[in-house]
Amino acid sequence: MPTLRLALSQVNPSVGDLAGNADLVRSWTRQAADAGAQLVLFPEMMLTGYPVEDLVFRRSFVAASQAALQRLAADLAEDGLGDLPVVVGYLDADGPPQISGDAEPGRGARNAAALLHRGTVVARYFKHHLPNYGVFDEDRYFVSGDQLTVVRIGGVDVALTICEDLWQAGGPFAAARQAGVGLVVNINGSPYELNKDDIRLPLVRRRAAEANAAIAYVNMIGGQDELVFEGDSMIVTSDGELLTRAPQFVEHLLMHDVELPAATTAPGSRNVADDMRVAHHTVDVIPPAPSGPAAVGGLIEPVADEAEVWHALVLGLRDYVNKNRFASVALGLSGGIDSAVVAALAVDALGPDRVVGVSLPSQHSSEHSREDAADLAKRTGLDYRVEPIQPMVDAFLANLSLSGIAVENLQARVRGVILMALSNQEGHLVLTTGNKSELAVGYSTLYGDSVGGFNPIKDVWKTLVWRLAKWRNADAARRGETAPIPENSIGKPPSAELSPGQLDSDSLPDYDVLDPILIGYVDGDLGRDGLVESGHDPAVVDKVLRLVDTAEYKRRQSAPGTKISMKAFGRDRRLPITNRWREHG
Image (tube, rainbow, N blue to C red; front, side, top):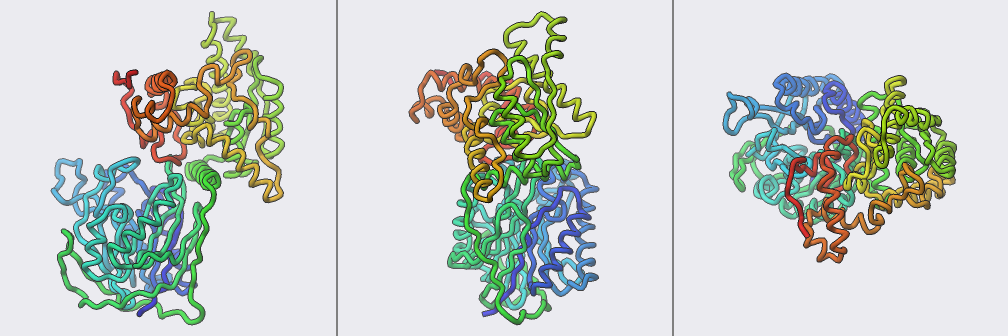
């Protein structure tokens, strides 16, 4: 049986940076060639970044992607890498956008993969299954392909597929079985969700059985607005054996020698298989089989949920800041758990020199909160400042007759004004620090504590915030480092400290009670009856659902933040603001 040395390039492209992404392909292909690769794979939409959203509708952008692909093929040959087959994702089109007046049935923008060899585009494949759920809107943008591309490489028939093709039975994988291929390549832009890696391996195994072929699955890493991609690239044999698996959240070149069945059908044939045509191509020259020991990519053991989420949040924040070219970030440090976790994430993502933490005490700020904020700054080494807000609050109250919650919200808004002033003056990106539980029930002040350009913990339930803090401190202890988060911030009852003796529990159920209800309602789409049947107190359910339903207008104005759950606010969960439907008790 032939053996191919595969190189799965788990890299971090940037949306819209066609030249930079092409340079990534060239440099990683060089590394793969130096390691003896015979086939190199790059992620979905590698040249354009993913997802490109409505850039698909700009014909100039589509044309730039097509031209970049041709240049890349030529540049690889000029680099002396022409004999090495390279599979790369890009944006293509074989007709006008579907939204245009001159649109043609069955033609339009394509989510495409190309195989580059000897300075040319040898073969193309158009994604067949187009996801249209959760964060995906691919039916809005792309036209589905109806042809399976099979390329003979080193005596092995290799089928090209893209991301969602793997998640649905039938289509390309059924066609691959009928075509008798030995390897199915699946290039991905598969966003991270907690525990998705536990779903992915069984899924790859099912498709390997369906195709009766080995699968090489390569996924990108990196942050793109709310999304973060974790990699988790792998190779699985036709009988489901996991040969190798890449680490999460880091760029990585996964090299592995895979023994594959020799091709038997005559190249150039045209078959009809499971409603797809099969188009065959041949790559007649590839680098020779490397001498010496076999390449073994290794297996990465899964990590704890808290570690996985922490790395996802760090990567999402780092890429949002760096790809949008912010030099630094600033956030309010209250001494509480949420701002402490966000500060620790920011320091891990960017380093302490690029993080400004601002204590904004009022007359209601406890001494321990001020001390805890200063303690966190000392532990992490961030740039720490103190800006008392009471004189500014008093100036407002001298000119406005306010009481009760209006005074509470005034304090939050004065803090927001100070943070945004520092942003304008010094160029920081302001990070807001509200967790998903607060966002769900509207426990925040518009233009106050919700102010900011990015929220690292927007998709993190409050109970998970505590778990992350404990994990991060324990991880520091394991490495002999200073724990970044003060124990006082973890242990004390949460409070906004906007009035004397205030606690979150004055307005909300305890978070151990609140979060399971929110998870069922928001993530699980359970109605009132389903929540009550799950064992939750009916009166508490009614209160929580009322809070969630009436806070949609606040969530619509909230900053973007890294998605880690199956249903994040924003791209995943889309509900009307003006909405009279209620889950009645």
